[in-house]
Amino acid sequence: MKCFVEEEEEEEEEDEEKEKEEEEEKEDKEEKDKQEEKEVEEKEEEEEEGDEEKKEEEEEKKEDKEEKKEEEEEKEEEMECKVAPWCAVEATITSTPQGAITTLG
Image (cartoon, rainbow, N blue to C red; front, top):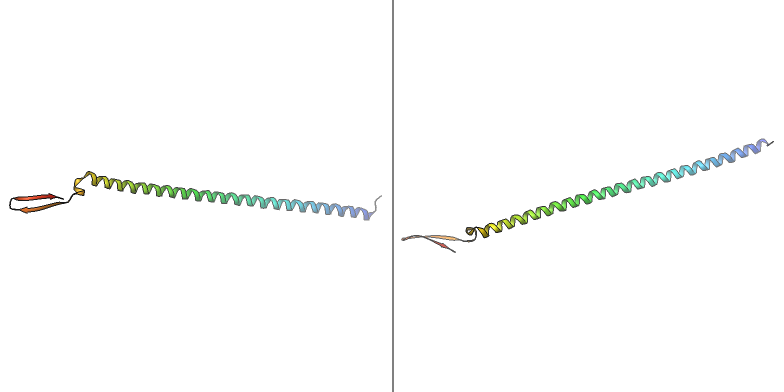
């Protein structure tokens, strides 16, 4: 038969082992939780960066469209002047005793 002291020592050793195992499991879980949290943060950052990039691209597209519109308007104005002779020519009307004389210059 084992004596009472030996049984207590064995129980204490078992308890210590269980405590160590529980502590290790707890540490592992904490480490895993930290890793998961870090991964979530990284994903959120990537999504934010992606959103920012999309916004920047959309802004660039809008700016490009505006520039093209302005260029088209300028071209249309130039074409109007080229097509309509009155746009580029000055006319002078002079009254004389014989009648009105129109001078283009």
